[in-house]
Length: 159
Image (tube, rainbow, N blue to C red; front, side, top):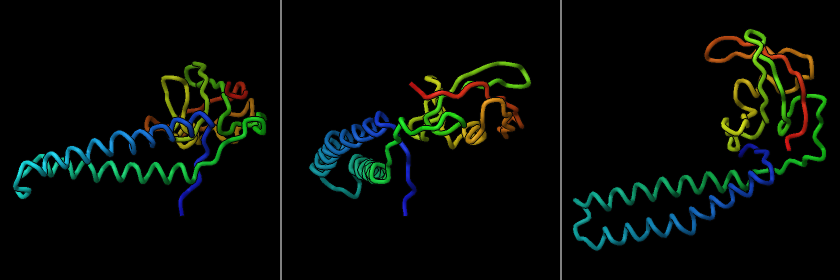
């Protein structure tokens, strides 16, 4: 049984486009590589053929996983999000209690996470620690560097 993955409309569209690219561009390309390598003769000593077959296996596995992800995806209805507590698709402004640094993150599904654009996964240590917290609450979050305390300053809808 596959687990449900919650995605934004943008995230699902991006996933579907990548899956389509793998099927319509990458798959035929690898098939051509296999055919070209096969035309070169003895397959038992043909490194090009072996490499192309390995690449095909990896691609098919990736396509299969992405198809499963798309099949189990559920769109998040942003109009029904509750901003009284931290949840997926919320933008949260937090303060590190030890150095007083403030930062803002949008909590997203794992495959939509992009730290450069301020999107962290709900399954990351910080994401997990913030889920369900309300403004004014302090989250004790265990990170590889030790326990960190973050105060939730503001919760809003990601725009």
